Length: 360
Image (cartoon, rainbow, N blue to C red; front, side):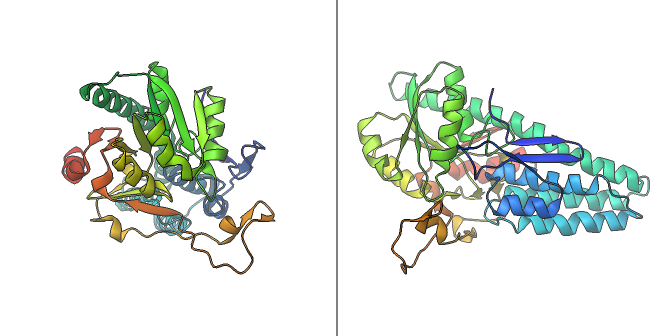
């Protein structure tokens, strides 16, 4: 059974505090939007899908006990607080897309004279709660699509179609989603098929999401796994016959350029040098067709302390300047395929295929 990072019943929300893992497993109560913004911004919850779900559910928890006199009042509450939640971590697009969709729903309901205030509130709560189950279903579809694509590529290149060795970066599993995971969902599916020989996970400096969180999930699920330092990836790909790299995404531009955790870009460069396929696993909610390329993606910068300290211990020379972008952008040209719940697409085909799927 995979880990549960989000616990929700109507009127109650708690998240597994990922700052304390793997030493301590503690759930933090989220009682409203202010709590939701804080746990997202402080990275007590992280991962683009989980950020969107927790953000929206924090609003659901807040408005659940409230009484609204008019639909206009409820609509303004929804719009204002969802836009505020988007500001907690701006690079990940899922929260923005979810906010836009829920604001559109609120606007539509507020204009419908046949819908009462109580009905509007109920339908809004239903829409936010549906995000949890949809995310798990989407992740399982991503896992199945990704595993199939990787095994087919290995077979087409004349290799043994499994068991295979995989490399992943950062954390993209149950701790970053509602459950199962995106890139780690692909790894889990390979394991369930009996086709995973081994998975390597990077430490993912400076926040160590790989060492703290991915490794925690892999041990929990008893997958054959090994942790490597970020600086070991080139040596690993040269020595260990890795079949493919699979990573997640915080935002995918229309041309396939992908923003993901810092360090992803250099792994893609090294993978290309070693002729190792490089896949991005992400739900459609991570694909932003409004942004033509990665040049337009806002990259969040984090505090110096994440680089200069480990816990309370300073490891960097006092007085040194720091540059700490949380993400980098991998050019589409380095990406073999983008794995979604609706299929696996080449970056060059992404915009047209997604528009077809969404009937745009």
